[in-house]
Image 1 (tube, rainbow, N blue to C red):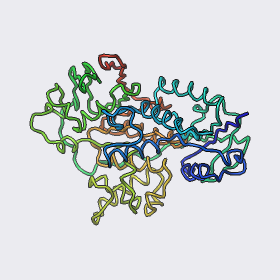
Image 2 (image 1 turned 45 degrees about the vertical axis):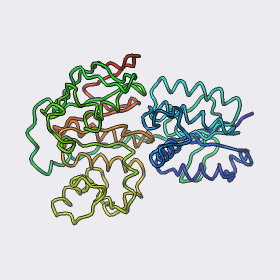
Image 3 (image 1 turned 90 degrees about the horizontal axis):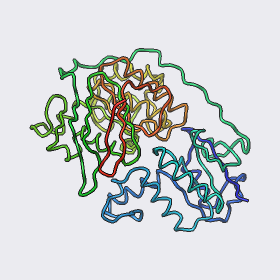
Image 4 (image 1 turned 30 degrees about the vertical axis):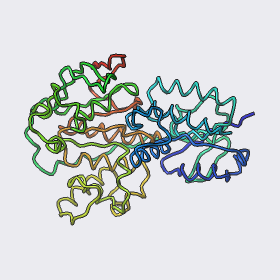
Length: 408
């Protein structure tokens, strides 16, 4: 009999410390049956470590195809490769840390079936932040408060809906630039890497003030489209792609493009490891720096504090950013990306890894920014978030000859 256990977490849970203690042979009393067994941890953090290893040494232990860098694989491909890598170590139990985060429905189904098979062979411990993600094989439940297991075995976490952000979003610090109504214009754009076609004949127009959701399965080309817009993909040259009124490759620099774009992805949190106060983090959105390294003006402080007041965090302005929960950090990152009211704001998986309450707060803030500004917003996610209500959606469909797209 395998004692499969789902452990609910929130954004104050210290999942890494807990997992490390269990793997080191020091499980809590409720999981004492794991003592002396050999385990492994399936997590996004483990994948990130392999990607970092690859960046440093041009190679990592987790590299399914020698001719492709791990960072070019989709989230689903990376997770599939990690699971097979871990199973080669012959573990006697697996810790599954939010295993379905960043996954589309198809890859989720693949993993669910694989975990169902493994549940007959070994014990599974699932760390889970969303109730809808619990595996059917889970027989017991608990909650991870900090790095301590509590409420075992019958704990059911309560969900409390977030309150609305009552104040209006603060105004832009400067007069907004005079740009054409159509900010981004893809005209039959296709991208291939060698013989591998990624996207084919994509038509997509983003106008000022529109609120878009970009949706599609893992590996369908969502990241490719985003990097074409941000100027980080050389495949944009030679395409009929117009950004902020100019055809790509007509003499503009990457920085000319980025000047009009606000951008956030959860991976950015790794770049902000210093001792930055909450106030300085928001102000750094005005200076486009990683943290703040110059004396801010009174106007900058005032604007930052207006945003913190909107978030209900003005009393925490001198708290260190690194000491916030993941949910609080995401709210601050959204404010930081929006503080200048950029013409285009791209939010890449902003709710990934968040519990339900924190994700709802982030969605509420993004929805409010869309309604109360002229900023065009593109929300990229594998998960359908309740309450998002984007008014336009670009849906990518995978095909052997490259993904096609249609709007809804």
